[in-house]
Image (cartoon, rainbow, N blue to C red; front, side):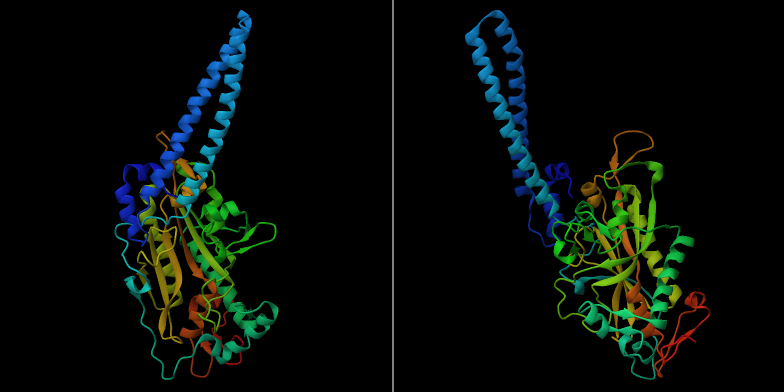
Amino acid sequence: MHDIRMIRENPAAFDAALSRRGVDGMSSEILTLDEARRTKITAAETAQAEQNKASKSVGAAKASGDEAEFERLRALVSEKKAEVAAMQTEGKALDQQLTDLLSAIPNLPFEDTPEGADENDNVEIHRWGTPAEYSFTPKEHYDLDGVKSGMDFETAAKLSGSRFVVLSGAVARIHRALAQFMINTHVDENGLTEAWTPVLVRPEMMYGTGQLPKFGEDSYETTNGWWLVPTAEVTLTNIVNNATVEENYLPRRYVAHTQCFRSEAGSAGRDTAGMLRQHQFEKVEMVSITKPENSRAEHNRMTECAQGILERLGLPYRTVVLCTGDMGFGAQRTHDIEVWLPGQNTYREISSVSVCGDFQARRMNARYKPAEGGKPEFVHTLNGSGLAVGRCLIAVLENGQQEDGSVVLPEVLHPYLAGKTTLTAQGTLA
């Protein structure tokens, strides 16, 4: 949500920032609606004052025996009461129109966010590791001999349809080990607070983090009005929904491992093979809530936390800054971390880390009280994958593959697998 006062004071700057996201200037439309709303509110307040004044005079006219004046004033009070009610209704309608308009406008990018139209204009800022060279043609994860028995798409299609998978045996255990390794690393080494949160939320929570109203088709709504979370960003960020916390409460750094649900609207024909793009998947999500002056540094910190997971797993990756045309609705700047997948011979996104400024906080009405006193201020919010568990499983399987169909597993996972080091070509751990 945008600050209407900022738009009033700097309409040209607001339009210029929006234009970088490919959105035509909207300040004129916003300010016209805002002026109509304010005019109606002022008129209602004036009529209310006239009503109150006439109401006080009614008793005096009655006491003086001036029946004509009494009737005139009583009629005036009734007239003003109806006028006030009508104006207040119109004012609320205009206020809702303004809120709806502002809610549909994306966040303003930072000045150093690269301008561009799509993923081709993203800018690489970091690269780690060197993709392995194979003496054979590397396969995609679902074609590996050791994986086939533990990754069942046919049964999943029978159960639920396309873009689902049933994991079993050793593959399911490696998937679980990855999630446990990520959570332990973020809690024990990165100082995040572990949380376990619902996957069903009220629509107000989806609105608070920006999934509603504009992107409802990307998620699943239940018959009783709850929504399945597309990521734990929704629940973790909304912990401060409609709250005013003390300054010493910040920064607040959370991590949660949850099931996530996405309709993948608009992705027909993309990544249909394997488990790269699923309707149901698991993710370890990081969320930070900070003071405004600390959010940029926190963004870099969270990016390093996500990168560190890949480094400990020995997975080559690169980090890019998303351009304005590829960035998410609520972000001011986003770092995408892309892991190397030898089966596809390319880098694929495994984490997006975004700083949202006070954009979500305004939607949630989340503030903090400065320690030195003064008016409460909006917090800043950030979110990022640390990491997408299924995609990390794909990367581990593909990068560790051997010519015989087995997979050498990262050393950091061995303690989570009872000391086992390899997924054999027969689909067992050894």
